[in-house]
Image (cartoon, rainbow, N blue to C red):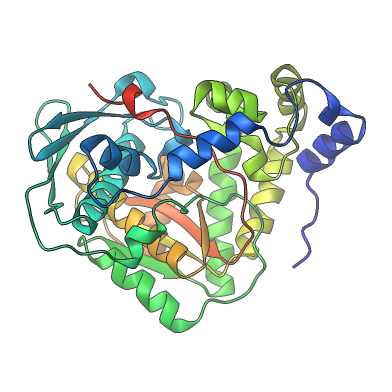
Length: 363
């Protein structure tokens, strides 16, 4: 499928063609960035210490790559605590995505622990701020294909190639989600995808009309590898096929190019290029349910990676309350909350956003 350039891509490409890539801080890669990727994704040792397990946990998906977690190391136990200093109140006012992110990290940690002969049992305690605990006592070693996918999983926010996934691959995705008693509604019919696209566009339009949302998003963008290495968090613009540029120029170009029409056109192209969409629905609309949805999504994402699929969130339909109500009605799920929306299909490898050093997330 040929990718049609959006206004954003056109503007960015025009600046790149004018010589932006020759400016300081604008190479599309750097040794420091490559070194950080290598350290972040190096294989888990056969006898890992707790810090290695934390590193694998932090490779989990999380909103805006804010990494809203802290890890407390104990004997035969790791606690995962919310880091509310990394909240995103404009897009996530009730901390739903924050607790889903904790679930993603807990699932990575659980899978990695089992692969190295530890229990890996994860449980969530909603009391107080809410935290997870992962048991590291001895158990039978269980090294799965999901474990092998942890270092390579990423959210690929680009256009896919439009190819359909075989039925056995979709069956494995469904089985991965069901592991945590979270329902996933899979949508691949073209009309149903268009219905979902309509809700994504509606939610996206309302978000872009919200100045606070736009400011918050911009704060988490990193326009070049040097900025990515310096912060070790946020969204690397090159991962979405935007050319790298100095932070000052990236900020200007964002203001020019980030429009409702360009973003809606982009999401229309991306969703239509995907095999399908998965909507994750937990059993309860509370911290426990949000945590469970994150765990189920992480398993889905790892299984997709193991099977050669790419995936990315299109959460606008669950982030805007009025649109979320429409989605609930469309899916026929009663009063249950649709937690996460993900498109999936076949696409290219892209640059990756970094994670913070392990010592920065341990309390």
